Length: 341
Image (cartoon, rainbow, N blue to C red; front, side, top):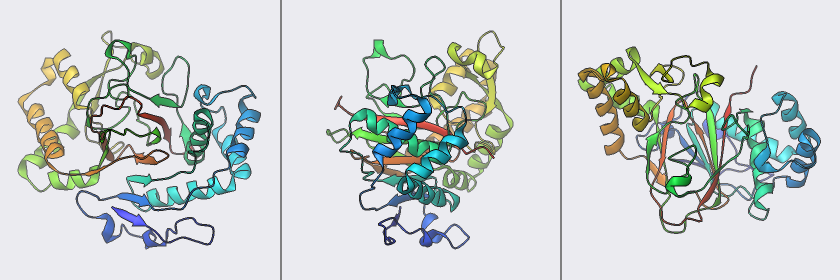
């Protein structure tokens, strides 16, 4: 993992180590390729300025859990940059790392631990808005900030991964979306104190390169590029994404250019059960080849500490989470696209 420790006079990490015009050697390792850790001093994020700006834009009574995608993302981004220049500088550093080849960025302390939870929602929302165009996490309340907390099985409404305390195997987010969000972030309000709930991350470009080194891997890439597989769109999202098939399925390749990977093994399996004609021996072998590589090659595996954040390129990286037993674990998740031109 690339660790950046050089700081400028204001305490922000210098990006010069990654600005030679190419992906540097330290980003080309196997398990930690493309993964950057910003070893920073405490981020002095202007919480009161952020709250004031959001209140002016959305109304004084808006809560962090109620924030929806802004009607004019560029306008809100400009306002936030003007009112919170240090937060703007942070997001500029983050975007530089992604421009220089990062697929995931860890920051161990964001500097929000002294704030109330809803203030933290607003601060992390502002960070995401400065990085890109935030998206709603579900089409009913249109909320952007998703509170990731374990729920009893009968109470889970949307996500078996984010509402569960079991292992989340390597996957990519928003596999049902025509073009999944390019990025998402996870901020730890409270990390699991049981030793579990570790974040796992792998650079999908390295996975592709490993597959290209074997005959089975090369065939797997070809099959998963040329074959569109069924993915079920939940009823609540079908109108939004223009799904007209009666059973709610659309067909997409697992491996492509944008995104590079669209991987939720459990959802893929559900689609193959519903449409067994797609479960050819070639498809089965290709899926098993990728799954075996992900299961048997180490990636980054580390805790996301309280007040820490990870930002992930969802078009490139696989991510997951180990199981945990501490039900006080609480993360915030926000997904966002690259800023519209």
